[in-house]
Length: 215
Image (cartoon, rainbow, N blue to C red; front, side, top):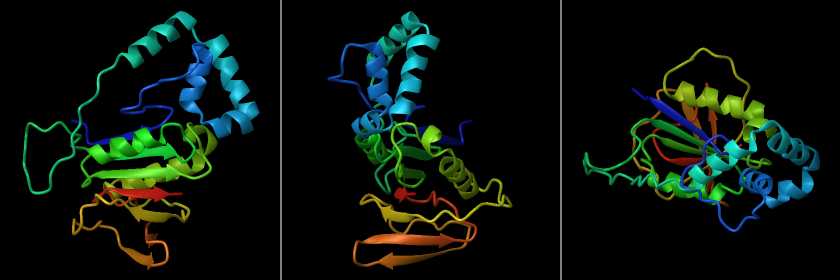
């Protein structure tokens, strides 16, 4: 059975529909992966992917894939209501980590997807200074985030990791009073901006409530 799920923009994007883009298939794919800021500033990376998409990928297959992607149905996922047990509800029951770059064109779609998932076992990770391909731009931070996620599930508890400083902003839909992580942690609040900074030993992504983690 599926016990966990990691969704990374550029690999998997949920509930995001392409619209208003140019008819050029290469530009469509680039606009899907990169935000306007990246398209204008990171020219070397954009050119590398432009050539890869145009020359290394079968264009007929790519058009068929894009047509299938645009014709997909909504997953119709619904957020469970606290205290209500409805087996007919469509939702992900496994631990889920959503990852998106803060400059990605899919930020709004990923946040909207997060609002539909069960807050008990969902974590949203926003990666700073990163666009639609965090696995390319920030591979080290992304790998570390995966390790924390797996540690939060009780795996690789003895893995050595560097300290990843990050601020946590609990979503308005967080499950207040939910269970605590089995790993020790101390949390300090910043009253001026309403955020919380977490220092954990070992540091883990708390999977017991939906939260927004920036790193």
